[in-house]
Image 1 (cartoon, rainbow, N blue to C red):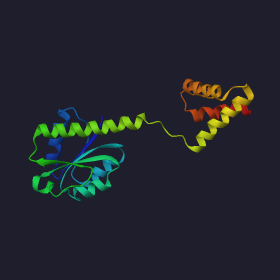
Image 2: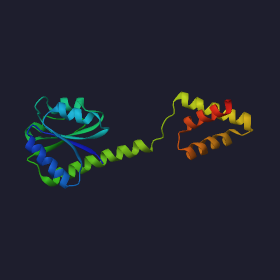
Image 3: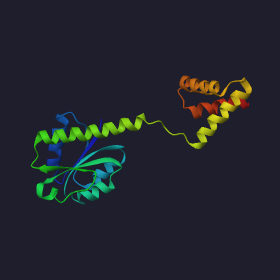
Image 4: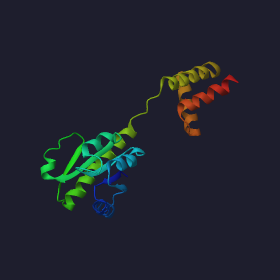
Length: 182
């Protein structure tokens, strides 16, 4: 589920937005009245949405956006006059007064985009470091020498041991090297 932080200058308005989101099935991670609090709450999280007004107690929306971790998007809620001056990349704009349906649909769209990017990152194969690749290569060479295996057989053996033990290939290769050297 996507983290949502509501940062509005008036605490009562922020709580109202939070209640609307919670009733609509979204998880609100935090409610605050200034940018420093929003940044602090976002720091421990990988991604999410910060809903904010044009001006907070300590900064404006663009300063807040610059300080947020990379996986965060900003939903700026402001008057149409102010929004006409705000054209920064990575900021979704919503005019006040809010139309509830537009607000919920916008949050849903932003949430789906973040979830899609998360899935895409998970589906990408993790790149091994040069050190890990060298460990695996050394273990395969040792298995090939000691057990007369082909490279393919040695690789499959490491893969199977890795899956059976629930460890990564590099960690399994390290264990095999330690066992075969002793």
